[in-house]
Image (tube, rainbow, N blue to C red):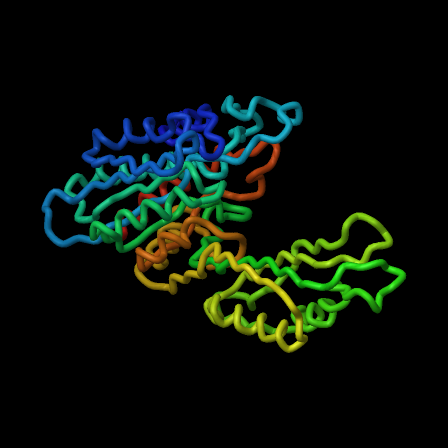
Length: 383
């Protein structure tokens, strides 16, 4: 069994459902400390819900100016779902039919193991490497993500730590390891709109104001807006309603208010401020009496082709023969926090077809290529 598979299985065996770390970080520290990494816990959160965070860094022996690459990821996993639907226990790593099964196998304990092994192998071959190496891990990526990576990044920024490159181990591949990497992600911004009317008897509409009827024309206008046209890396910004709620439950009462939950997934062609202004202008145009509350989940980030993208693409081609596709599709990741601090951030990990599903797994044949890609990337950046 390869070192990466061994470490992956050890991580899967720890039931680290958000925000529980279940000893994953201690296991990683045991691997990195002997390699000269200074390992620091930057835990955060209220009592009883503390999020476990790790910052591990190794500075080149020469001590002079150097570039630093950060590997980043999360030890936490989503809940298993019904245990009776799993073919084998989700926290007992199980190999069958050429696949390794277990919660976190694809998202993203294999990536973490591959990162650790890749750094160890790079240092074994290049003990005098001029490249600074670091690992940033959290146990709160799948959850609220308020006491995890964002806290670590702000802590590092405050004390003047810098990084040049970052690879997040999210499962980005589709059919083969390395066939897709994320060189950016859309931003996410949610809103809750409360449109006010006047409650009344449904048989006497002239004595009431139906907020659903008041909202309908404005809602149609919002659906029809072209927020932007995207660009070479991003699709156009999307606005979607997720929930509409009104009414008392009775069929003969006109509701007094209508609540709408919505979300923007926006690209670098728009800003949260511009989107907020445009949406509110439509509401005002229709003369609505409303309250509006915004939550910005993350701003978009983009790493254009350059040193990091080129190195990763070259590593993937050399190790797998695959010409990778750059993409910014999908949901958010902790890359959105890291990109506010590190100028070049991308995501690269295993195939994502089984993530968050029953019987999550990774093909055994994909484990070593992922490790090799990470290691070759380090070798290329080290020069």
